Length: 339
Ligand code: NAD
Image 1 (cartoon, helix red, strand yellow):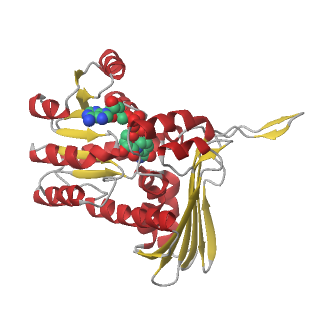
Image 2 (spheres, helix red, strand yellow; image 1 turned 120 degrees about the vertical axis):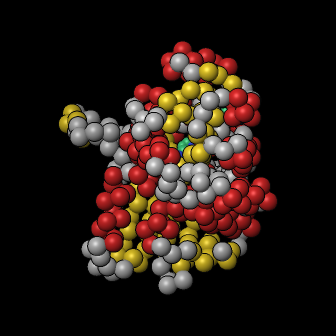
Image 3 (cartoon, protein in one colour; image 1 turned 60 degrees about the horizontal axis):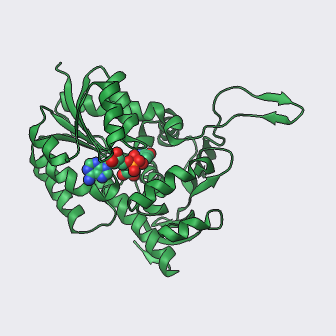
């Protein structure tokens, strides 16, 4: 099978991680070109991965000898980049979310994906590739916990990452806590239950990081979602976890419960000293989801090779964005919002 030749757009917090995985760990992928606005990132990629560098993504797509584009640029650019790449006949892997708002550009992006069924398009909701979330899905499907009654999900970045997050959200609109962070759990709840929420009541604050008020971000966001059969979910997104990367989910069923990653343990070491009993914790999303990030890209490459559609679709992206935007609207207006 021929290797898939790739161009990566975006070399920031996640783009460099994806580039390293593709260039060094995924044997059927060949990263030939990378694009970013930051010259030091481009120099690093050139020195470490032997790639051609570009500042203008359209020039890269038009000129480079590539089969597929991996888009890891800020969210607001996703629609125009996806549209441009597909129209240039390239397969596309695009990071979450599909865009900042469910506007005309995102709808044109959806139409463009539909108009190119021969090209693989896949979205980066990587938690669906994490071994623990997959194990939980099997437990639910096997009926081991009965009917789902309630879901509680935490997606809370470590406070040690605040500086890098503030830079990310100051350079470009992140979409806010619901669109940028809670969207992962929104996607998982849709994936686990096969249901869509019908109402949300959401709130947010900046108690732990008042400086985020300046850039219009909530530090903590809480969304309650109600589903047609009465099931309820509570999502808590945030950036303030003192101990590490707290990405946790609890699913309560009529016949049992399950919890995924109750504690963000770094490894199996527990330290017993005069200070007490201590377990070191993971400090970043890239550490927690390292294998999931690798597996989602491996799967994308295989799907391109075998001419298959992506596992996570544009429709998944649109629906998750619709729900996240309703949460944002509810927090901003203080009202219960129908979805
Ligand atoms: P970042 O700000 O750290 O990096 C952005 C990169 O894009 C930089 O290299 C920048 O130079 C480049 N860029 C910006 N505008 C560009 C343009 N017009 N043309 C070409 N390059 C451009 O961002 P990040 O944290 O890496 O996030 C990027 C995307 O990845 C976002 O959509 C974010 O939501 C997503 N993300 C997903 C996860 C996940 O868990 N799946 C985690 C982090 C980020």
